[in-house]
Amino acid sequence: MTTPSPAQTPHVHDDVAPLDDVPTAVPDDHDVRATFRAARVRFTTPRRKVFEVLRDEAAHLTAEEIADHLASDAQPVSLASVYRALPVLEDVGLARMSRLGEGPATWELDHADEAFHLVCDGCGDVQHHRGELVRTVSEHLHADHAFHATSVQLVVHGRCASCAIDDEQHR
Image (cartoon, rainbow, N blue to C red; front, side):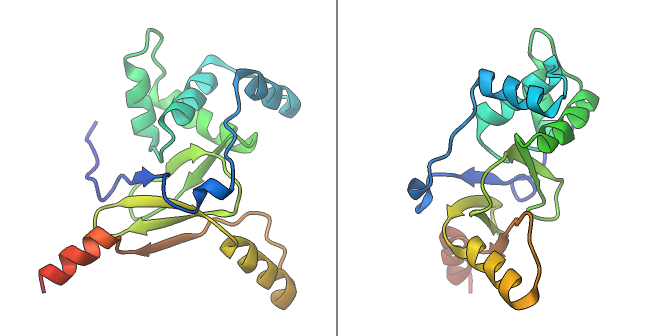
């Protein structure tokens, strides 16, 4: 497998303000099993292992990166099994797919819609932010366009502070 360039694989900064105002609960094994039971979906070993990688890494990962994490496991999970597990995790509400740029889709633990992504087109960094913006957009769509959004993924592309400074220095 080829390793994607940093611009293709986002690096996530989850420690930026204002994340502290919205607690993020990561489900434990009991909650995950209960989620699968409630959805009447089998909680297979590959699904569990893929979920654990998403939980432990707390980052946007491609299917290939998840498979790479699992390759050294005593019971490795194949790339095909990873690809089969991810949509199931999404269907039961444990994972979320994002298209943050031109590269491959990335996956992360599911999170509330009030979280949105700032993607630096220079270095590929991704920053999670939480606030009222997504709710404001949803309310606007409902009130002004009679559109009832069921899910919102807001991705904003631009330049992070570091890349903007580099841009200025190279002008």
